[in-house]
Length: 240
Figure 1 (cartoon, helix red, strand yellow):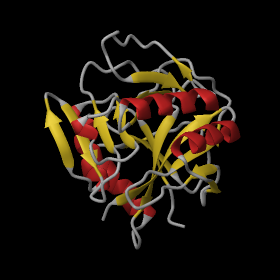
Figure 2 (figure 1 turned 135 degrees about the vertical axis):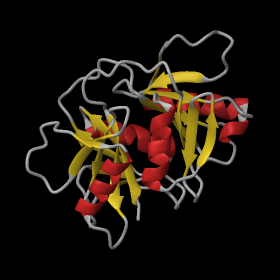
Figure 3 (figure 1 turned 90 degrees about the vertical axis):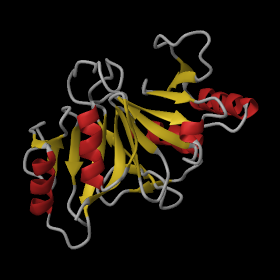
Figure 4 (figure 1 turned 180 degrees about the vertical axis):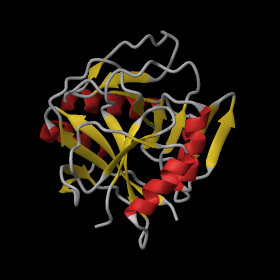
């Protein structure tokens, strides 16, 4: 048995504002989440639920994960960028080269994302959210493939990618060198055990794959916080 990926959760200083930005950009509706917070539900089985939870911590370093949004033409890429700016996003410089054709932006709280140029074959068929591009090792790509039961769709030169059997966004890890970890990450995965699975048994399974329990000050709760082999936090939530 494996867990399913319930959501990608973003810590937010203003969850309502950040949810409105991403709802407007992705063309989704906000909804209540069974585990609390504000959520953007996927449109189909291949989509990705987003959750926004309140946090007092300010963003100080680049995120370890960012969205790669796709475009169908240069005009479409321009329209996506314009819509992001109208909703409160902004251009940022992360060292991209002038000849690079993707556009790097940040949402109202500084979370980085890219709008990819048309014709990117690696993201073909993945949908508007083409990928979650992540800082991570080959080992962590293998871990998440086993943890979620998603096949590896790329494994070359220590770069890995996985994708749900239903399709949708790829999750990619760029290999070394890895950026040093500074504090708790602002984006993390929330997993839920498959139907009929026991939460404790699923935690034990994930630990056997290379995860480890961690205390982030969560106190006495009915869910667990773990870290993957690269130290990225994730949560395992009880079935609801």
